Image 1 (spheres, rainbow, N blue to C red):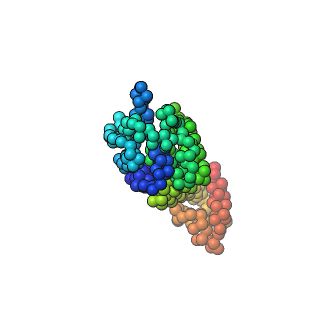
Image 2 (cartoon, one colour; image 1 turned 90 degrees about the horizontal axis):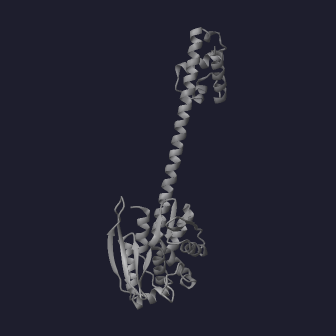
Image 3 (cartoon, rainbow, N blue to C red; image 1 turned 180 degrees about the vertical axis):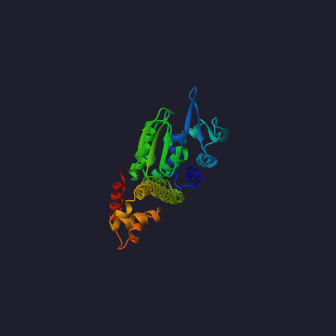
Length: 303
C-alpha cells in the first residue's frame, strides 16, 4: 500500500473528543478539499472532494456529529488511472453555515475565507487536529517528501504557520493551479506525521527510510565495486600485454630479479590484485611497491 494511503487510513481512524479539535479538523478539510458554490439569492452549497472512502466516512462523521446534513457520492476520475474519488455534498442550510462559520470556513456574511481565524488553532491539540485534517484533505507522503495542497498560497502559508508553532519546518511553493506546504527530509516528515497523530505511519516511514538508505548504500557500494573491477581488469590487461611484448623480445631474462619475479607472477596469475601479488613475492612486497614495479615493466615494454 502506498505510504499516502497508509497515512490517510490511520488518520481517518482518529476521533478526537474535544469539540475544538473536531472544528479544527473540519476547517482544514474544507480549506484543502472544499468548494463553495454560490447559487444566487444568498443561497450557497458546499462539497468536499476526497481521495479515499475512509476520509469520506471521517468527514461524514464529523459533519453529522455537528448536526449537519450531507450526502456522499463517488465518481471515477477522467485520467489515465481512472481512480475513484468521493464527494460530500452539503446543502447551505442554517445549521451547516453556522458550523462552518465556527470552523473558520466562511465569514459571518457567508463568504469563503482563505484561512481560518487564529482562534480555530489556538491550542496545541487544535493545531494537531488542523494538520490532521489538512493531510486528510490534500496531503501526500512519500519516503522523501510530504506536502499538503491548497487552493491558494494564503492557505498553504497558514498550514506552514500552524506547523511552525509546533516546531515543524514547512516550506511553501506556488504552482499555476495550486499552492502547497511541504516538508523534505526524514526528520521533518516524521514530526509532521507525529503532530497529526499518525504514530503508526511514523514507524512505517522510519522503517522505509532505513530500508531506502540501506538500498542506496548497497547500490553505491556495488557501483563502486564494479568500477574498481573494471579499472583493475583494464590495468591487468595493459600489464599482460606489456609483459608479452617483453617475452617476445627475450628481454625478461635480462631484467633484475625482483622485476623478473613480479613479471612471472603476473603472467601466472592475471586476475590477482596488486595486494595479492605482493604477498606472493619473496620477500613480500607492499601494494605500492608492486604498482611501481609493474609501471616500470610497462615503460620498458614501450617501443
